[in-house]
Amino acid sequence: MHKAPSFVEKLQNTVVSEGHPVRMECRVSGVPAPQIFWKRENESITHNTDRISMHQDNCGYLCMIIQPAMKEDAGWFTVSAKNEAGIISSTARLDVNSETHTIHHLLIC
Image 1 (tube, rainbow, N blue to C red):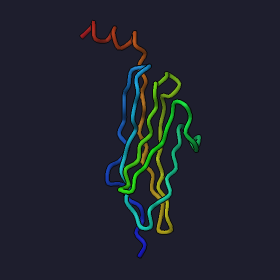
Image 2: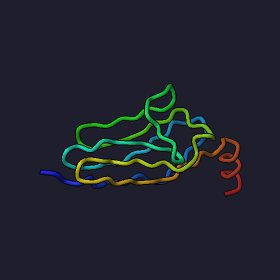
Image 3: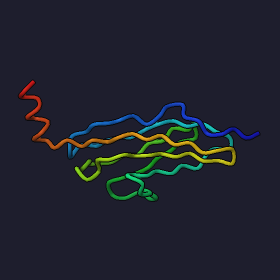
Image 4: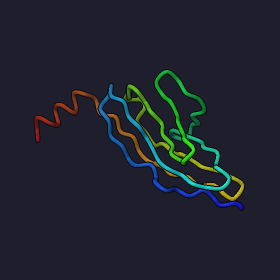
């Protein structure tokens, strides 16, 4: 039996302060278990680095952890899930605020 991938939970827009860790996460289902592809601004993220790691478990839970987040990490992230029955994608925005901006914002409020 084949079942096209579907999102149980989609990626969510996320805001983080520069220098802090951030987690982009979602959950996908499908039979057979879909292959997962991550992109940032249409550039593939294919392997873990010292700051960026991608994880998935047997229940369809997917996450990308960036630590520490830097200004250049901001942008649109897309996760795609593909199997023989189909392909789906979810896109969300990551905004990285500088510490001074965050402090300034708190003082104004």
